[in-house]
Length: 193
Image 1 (cartoon, one colour):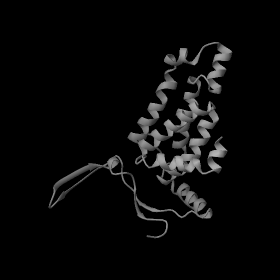
Image 2 (tube, one colour):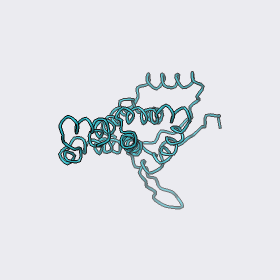
Image 3 (tube, helix red, strand yellow):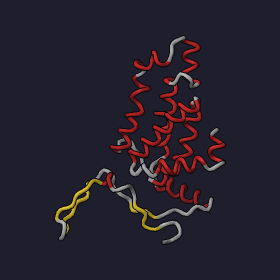
């Protein structure tokens, strides 16, 4: 299923559509969490709920300068943790088959499974535990992309948690939050313009 999505280009189209909405780190983590849960529900397979969104969002996390551990945590917090709550998923079916307890019966008591995705989203919006790539990791990522013939864009790094304010002669005092300006702006496209 995942291979078909990728080889036909559908995965790229789906990821591109979702990533247009993920203008900051919090929304990127939210998109990852929701994608994992959706794949869990549609495919009924925990491993696909990790692999498919992982391949969809790997570059988006790297382009934002986020270390791979952030993507890994989001995938686990949604793909692995929520799978026992879905009856037709392999994990939910295993629980029901071996314990004789339906996933909907134990779901209200599965606090970790229910709360963890929201904690991960909270971390994404606040920046808590969101580890940035080291300079070596950034260089290795850029080298890997260039070897594949993919030229990066040049972006203006925006502090999403900061507040930008200044005094304009015409409009007076202007103030806005960094998280509301749409992420890192492209300064130079990959074609050089």
